[in-house]
Image 1: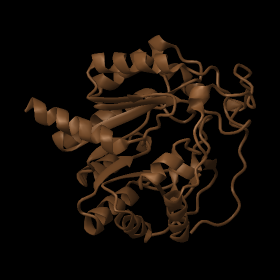
Image 2: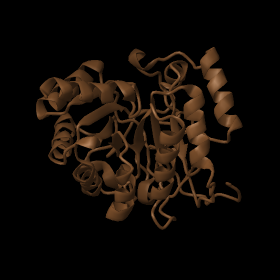
Image 3: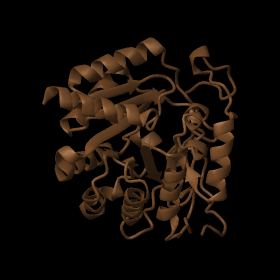
Length: 318
């Protein structure tokens, strides 16, 4: 289990030790289209208690997702395995960074048991980056997929994985278990990687997605997601979409970056809902089979509906 002091890192607002000054004030009033009700319904409270009692983590809580109330009231959640301490320090992410100590061989069964008790039809499983592990955490994904298939055989399984440092063998382990959806987020456009995703590489992530499709074939649907608001242009976003399509990505999500704390990268601008519609249209023109684009869209938001859209589209074309 997790214990010990965390490694203290520099502010994420200073990638590489250089402060980023461009951006909007942290405490300014947000646009009206970003307002959501605070979570607190009965289903939300019940799931929160159950998840905490089983010593599990969800990305919904760790990343301060704005949709946590809506999703949990629908009885869905995205489980985060391998602890809540990440070995990387992305400038936008609210998950804590340090030296992980989490080691729980029973975690896959506990996640699967929660999936069964919640009656999920589509479970999303993600993790922190674990560059400290020999297979970068791939074995944990294998264990969770197998456990869910054992305890909740009717549930679709979507995995949202790290890049495994671009290594093929960890990726092959996961794809061999045939998750219904393989998701790996590129997060932002290539130009912004030195600022927002130090330690990662856009083309390496794109290659992971292409290899996942090549390994899994028609049995695995590929998916990726990006944020806007860090200083990218519309043209850069569409070019990133094009690269993902070349790498055989089928589902795309696009949402607004919201700064978690003053220690994170500032929001450069808030994109208008009409601009998200334009991004969605551009993505469909490039050939994506399902696109969710909106200010509050996150990678796992209505993930079951996106997977179903792809399945129905393929059935109609058969």
